[in-house]
Image (cartoon, rainbow, N blue to C red):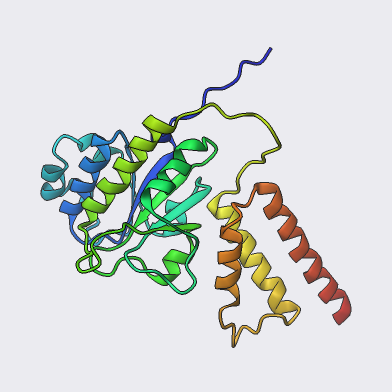
Length: 255
């Protein structure tokens, strides 16, 4: 008889992604913030200093979290950083017109802790500019820390600390056994969802529903709509199958 598998702890399912970080010291401080809360997976996207993980300031400010720095990965794009994740959460101090669904840190952390099928990434932008709109729409949720509206600026490592703390507390307080009731498919990964959007956009252009020269906000609206559903792999496959049939039908009409 197969023994039931134990749920994966949140510390093994949560990734911290720092995008285009300017100061190596902030990377070191973020690593320290992560380790104090029991997290270790750190990915850097195109940091300004390519040697940031070995920078003296980064090592000094990591203050005992040198193992987190040593295990960190540097990648060129956000897509690479999100590989293997089925939930990506952008941190932003400002709301966007077509942002994905918005959470505050505590409800988000409770969701991450409660669902052991989630392999999540928390995405933090550049210290000065934050995340671009293009980077935000690649994520399936957005979290905003409810700071003082008169002065809402947080240092990068402080923002990492807030999210890491909330996730740790949720993991400690909210652990529960899954009920096992009802069907639940495997959640689609970020790369699968991105591929689906590219395929769907191609089909919509082909059937002339989307004008590539005047796209307006159609694709951002579709991204926002689907990000509320937490697409499963089979659902992504269904949508891609529909896109394939639309393209095939259009090709037959042309013949």
